[in-house]
Image (tube, rainbow, N blue to C red):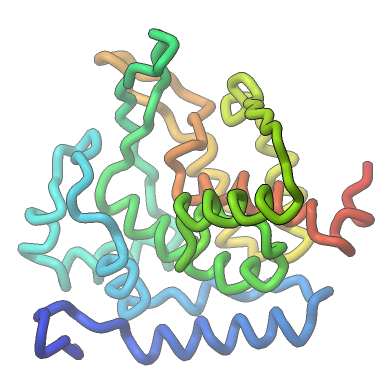
Length: 250
């Protein structure tokens, strides 16, 4: 395992980086290709890299396992996770729902997945990012690597100065993520990725139950904190890219 001598941080896996680079090159070279065999790219090494890219400071999920506790037996945990993933026996745990206050004195729910679930979500997100980054338009910033909200604000500010914009309208769709139809998300994703194992795993995430104040609500997860919260974003931005818009007009 490679280490940064200055900071002591683990460097990214060269094997995983090569896989993702090759996947991106294939996506770039074949813009109309639908990827149907991606699941085999996720192995223990891939999950280890996903672990290193997962936020360790976030709150624990319903199983109350922290990142530190998971890391205490990391290799065995990753091996076990991989075997469950490979066998198709991985069971997505409930998502813990917490409520945070908004500026208008209302509250909005936030879903907190179990730490192990975040690792597998991150692994799938890494694969999807390698493909969809090629299709996204330059003005999109959300959930993209090496881009941030500050970058989006700077881009907007520069455009306003250049075009002499005097008025900005901020609009939000009420409860959009609550109401985005899951079947539509799947249909859009299949235009570029249609791996059966990955799609079934995504289906489990979308249908996972939520633990809210001691009560379990099954059937529909608020997708905002699904690492494929990326899923919705991928779907929207994919629709906004030229050729795909024509495919999805209906």
